[in-house]
Length: 130
Length: 140
Length: 102
Image (cartoon, rainbow over all chains, first blue to last red; front, top):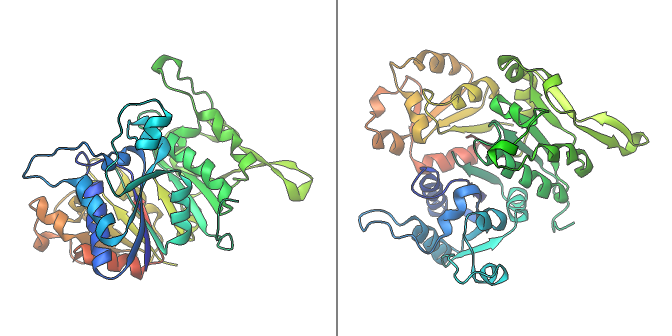
């Protein structure tokens, strides 16, 4: 089965991104395809490269990043939501005259159309949020 | 259209259950709806619980320093979004009637562009039926 | 059509479960997860409405979220089935669509 996942909340404050990660991992381990995880609202904070959680805590952005690397999951940050919240990749930083960028490897920034497309192409869209 | 498998038409529903301004969900939900309109899917919007407050007709945000996005709802008809369901019980519980909400209309191209009501006031049972028929449910 | 509904809020905090129960069609399923698992427990003021809703709706609860909150699988309302994340995935396969009551 082909899945699209929507994550509406950032890491650590809400359990939503942990639940989404656990679900995604379980689906992949069972042989399903998770072809896209779309991050919206504060969910875009899952894609920051600047998170430094304590050693004994899980590193949520790194966990997602590994899913992209190991399983080719397409991790997409909504561009409008990301810009509002100061999450910029190199291109967006340049375009907006910013000197630094902070999107972790494995994530890409794109438009809301990618969410709609996930809804169209996936057999199931599962939403995690607050 | 920027949709490369445009044969697929799914029933997309946007479930709005939160009041505006206290959180950003109402605004960012509306942004998704407007983008989604370009994809030619069968779109329904539901306003239930505190979501009915998103459509109140006299919003004024000057004093809270936020943009009043409520006028944007009246553009939904231009985007061919004309299935807007409001749960009657949610209005009743909050002492509201349709009079307190903005009127939302669309122009019917099959009827000489006559202006028609996009808002469907539905009972709990009717809404349950609508929800059950959806392929994809977006909630924010 | 059959729909899987997910509820991740405690009924003591928000009305997500109440809204879900009133709008879920007979024959659909509800998965309680995150803080939503609180509704699955026996002896709360919501246990009775849970039991009544179970006449028409199948209820599941996410075990890892129960355990995390110190709640025992043995004390869930009778008829509520405990699943893990694999079971959650299986539920999404077994239903035609998923609605999250955020």
